[in-house]
Figure 1 (cartoon, rainbow, N blue to C red):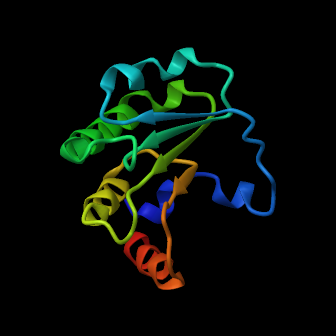
Figure 2: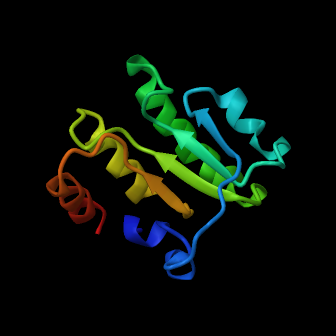
Figure 3: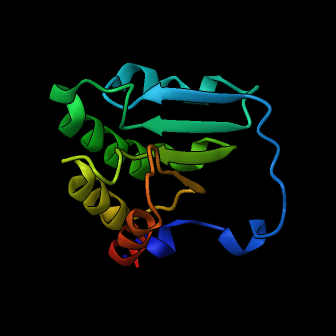
Length: 129
C-alpha cells in the first residue's frame, strides 16, 4: 500500500483546524504502554513516537511495535492517530518510510521533526508518494 494512502481522511481535514487540546505521546518501544492507549479517553490525539522517546538501540523494536499495534488495535482507538518519525537527516529515515509504506491500516497524521530545508520535505514526499 502506498504510504500516501495511509494518511486517512486527509481530504476531510484539509482546510480545517483540528483541536488537539490533549496529545498523548507514547514511546513505541514500550509495548505495555501501547496496549494501554485504549484506556486514555481524554486525549484528542495519540502520537506513536519513533524519535526522541525511543533509545537508539530500540528503534527497530519500536517500528515492529507500531506495525503490530496498528494492525491489531488501531480501530479500538477512537481518536486521531499520529506517528512521529525520525528526522529526514537521520540514519533511521529509510526504515521509518518502509514502515509507513508497509502498514495495512492508516494513520491520521505524520509528525516530521527537525526539518531544516524544503528539500528534506520534498525528499520525504517523493519516498512516500
